[in-house]
Length: 335
Image 1 (cartoon, one colour):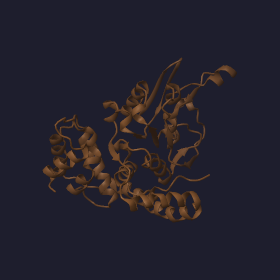
Image 2: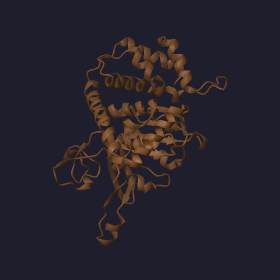
Image 3: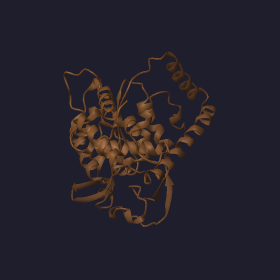
């Protein structure tokens, strides 16, 4: 079975790749929303990143990938204390998935054959400590959106129905992709994504040719292609692991915090989620660059990713949201 297309081999799309790397360094950033044309590598990048990341240590037979036995939910009846390494979870949430499939429900088979009331975990349990990916996220049904909003807020999945009273950890990086021509995203869910990226088909002929060459090599000379690019992925994996360790040591001055706050006030972003996300993204970026302190340069480089989807609409300003953010960044932080 073929492994996913290597993350490092994806041509261009630097903003999308950077956003995903930042959430891999600090999952609390809150996920990535990728909107753009079909065939621009959105789902390829998500699957490639999950394959790139180091495995996680989880308790054997634990349905929610708990790190230690004490974290395993009681209803799972986990008796072993053994742990093992498993790939970082990447769970697809299909558009047509039922609420029971997403949250989990009564295990009908056990109920009918053994007369036992048991819980069958859903997609949220499988995604704990990993990634939950939704393609065409803007077409997601409203009741599923409401579920995701509740879980994203609490980091816990709670089921109270059919005589069940179940709860378990559900902390994951939410990644959504979609085509803006097919509809807008509900503002409540849009605000839950930490970073937002707009992608487009490349217009440079040389870049398009390189995309074709790499994809063709993946399909026709798989072994040699993977050998070449897995080395690049290994280097990137080491940088992510190193950045995770650096993150806790980064220094953040009060002046930098004022820059972040002033920038969000000038942009008119609602609430304080914009400041917190921008700060986390800038810190992850600084750690990725192996810098020891957070500076204006780091804030400038990630501001559009963290804030473009938080702007209020201005019908008199025809510039794109990313352009508007960059314009105000120059005004507040300098060119």
